[in-house]
Image (cartoon, rainbow, N blue to C red; front, side, top):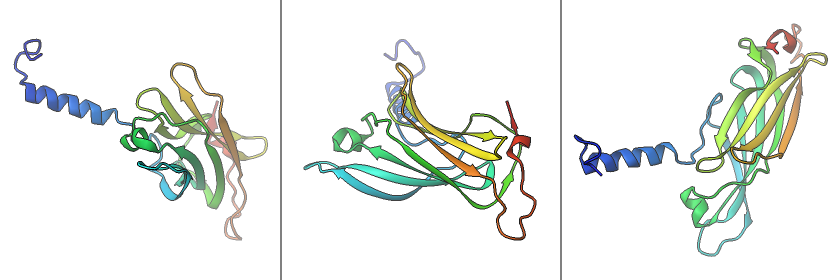
Length: 182
């Protein structure tokens, strides 16, 4: 193999292969938001000699809209494949987003921008939380879905956050329509 790549020793090639394997590992990868906080896990299927299947609930703050937090629950495969990170996770994901303080937009955004993205299989499936604005109702709309490169996935969940004053000091409520472009 090293004859194809003169100057690269077999040790370097093995190191490169290990680096590429780590790079493509199904670890959670945030695209817009930081890594979510694990709130709790609950076992759903008992596995005798390997980790159980679980439901895990995570929380994260919207990185572009101050005062909004989302929580989502995802199934996590157990067994040896799940433990090694090789199992393809199912697409059943629930989502709830709420106002947790005064809402302040950090800059202009586009409808359907990613708020968070996470891999759900080694190569082909990912979960995404996207955000948009219902300008008529002044409501933020969050949707979670998982897609698969080859066949797609129709499973999704939606949550809305009406933009409301937060206490007497928050009289100036921002309009989401002023911060979203089509």
